[in-house]
Length: 230
Image (cartoon, rainbow, N blue to C red; front, side, top):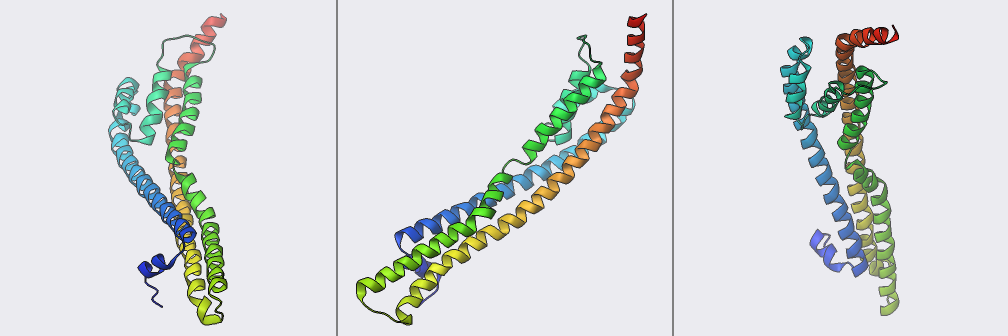
């Protein structure tokens, strides 16, 4: 018997082919998610570095309006997507019970959650593939073995030689399921660790931004409160 992929595919039954095709589709989905996420992460990091190098001096000088305008132009950067709505909220002229810095802090928390969700987009696919693919492969193995024994029953022949080919073809399904699941789990863990690191960096950077805003506007808010009390 030849164990070439084409020969194995040709000798499979219909249900085994359906299971194998489903596993190949899961592998393609995993690969697409990994490639798309890595491209998005690398582009976001490169844009963030360029954005920070440009706006760092502006933040030190308190030119928040200019920073907010530049953040609108760097939407690929996760940090810029946090900075833009935070500064927009901070510089609103509307008066309310909460000081502008507190509004900016709450907006930063909301935006960090939104950006984190965007960064993790597609990871659910990897997690599902990693957990489900082995069972799908096992299903293909069971179906293949049932088909092999049905062939024995229909022909009336027995012995190891008559079932070994069918069993070997069925076990290919389990191997295929593991080959799909193992990389999906490893890549999920790698991406998850990378995104967790990015989220920690965003939390530190947004905290420093809030500190800058509070340093500039906090005293003004305190003065306004004292004046209102008087």
